[in-house]
Image (cartoon, rainbow, N blue to C red; front, side, top):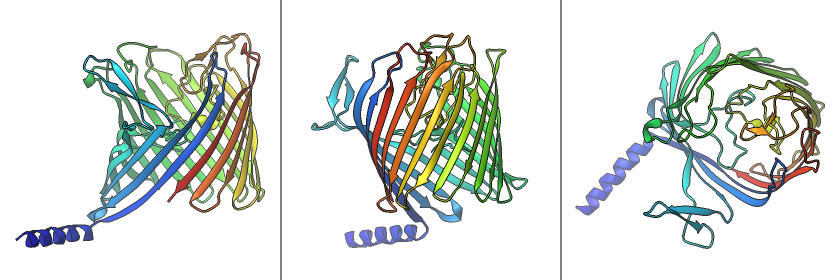
Length: 400
């Protein structure tokens, strides 16, 4: 009888597997970083992080799909907290001990086709355009994803996404109220050379303060468009955003222009960006546009950058970029990159500094990439500290 049950179970599993297809991919990244950064504080760090991520797509009948991306993210030698009965925390090693860092999920969603439309439900990355306002921040150890529902449809030859995301939920009483992100994003391709994106984003986070602490956030509405022309050699991109706020009569804007020209192995580029003093960076890949060293944020900031991508061979390439940063408003402080909090300095001085980013990438195989990067920031007259800030990293990435 046991043999019959086992055979029936195997037959059922085989029949089920015949109706579904499993595709997999993944990546392993290990990165050693060294910081010597002045941001109004002493901040010298030397540490190593790793990320191991597996992407599984389970394709079901009628076009349905289940996607899940478990990942292990940790810093070498980190400690984890274990809460005692009295509420106090004991900190335990995760290396050379029995304690482990938690396994998390980068994405976990269901994809449901609805004729010419589709619905994606669950935790998912939301990355659009140049990632100036909505990005996945995949350069960070964990990346950035949202608990969201996304409805996609085609309109007028383009694709429209309607997205609702719960950023914070007040049911657990940690925050004062729900915080939500809602947006419409329309993508249109006009022939082979032109692309146009338009969007409206509502970021409802005014009550997203833990236990009422911290500065009051502002609900914001963002109205933007992104246009890109790509010819045989020339490429021009502009993305421009206007914002208004619920708790202020002020408005804000962010203008971005970038031009590059492909000269075979050599691709020079130049960019200009300005963000006014009330601009909200939202969920951008700000690291990409304001220098890898992450000192100044895209708020009350004017940026001019020039650089080049140079391919020595199919396996070896260099990216070099030089930034000049200035304040926009004379009476407002500058802002930090990661936190959007003010950077202490002389409000009467406009020049924030210059930054040089150098990234050397080597691909020994199609699956592997090794990056060596060095960044240096020369502080402008705005900062009291005139010593250079420096950042370097060595990274190994394996993708399959």
